[in-house]
Amino acid sequence: QLQLVESGGGLVQAGDSLRLTCAASGGTVSTYGITWFRQAPGKEREFVGGISLNYGITYATSVLGRFAISRDNAKNTVYLQMNSLKPDDTAVYSCAARKWATVVTSQQNDYASWGQGTQVTVSS
Image 1: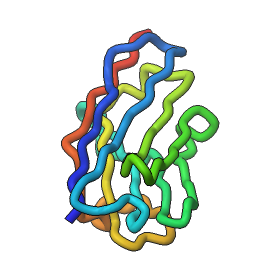
Image 2 (image 1 turned 90 degrees about the vertical axis):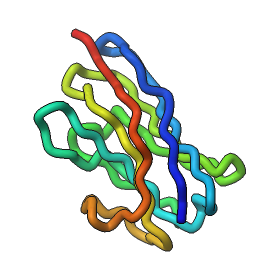
Image 3 (image 1 turned 180 degrees about the horizontal axis):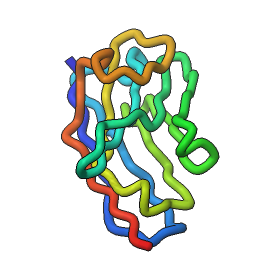
Image 4 (image 1 turned 180 degrees about the vertical axis):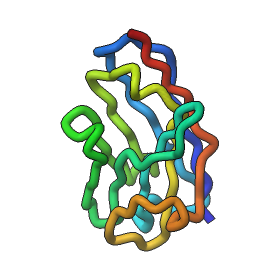
């Protein structure tokens, strides 16, 4: 059972950057696929991007070219670098884990472990 804690959210202006951290415990991230989701008020939760245990990476079209996911096995941590932020990026961002995932999936039910989320607010 992997425990996940997100951090790094905050209030920024359009065009700014943030780096979110997904810190894991109770297991090693190198044996999981780790995926980021986000949910804005009044909206459904949506897939942002993820990284498989063998470093395959997939992004949603809406963030492609602006966001980047990386994994640091030594720190047991996954990062979401967010650049050129837009007001539409405002949401609670959560990371989720799927054991032995060799491919990234966008289905919420595929993931057994979830963090509590961190708020990102982008003003215009």
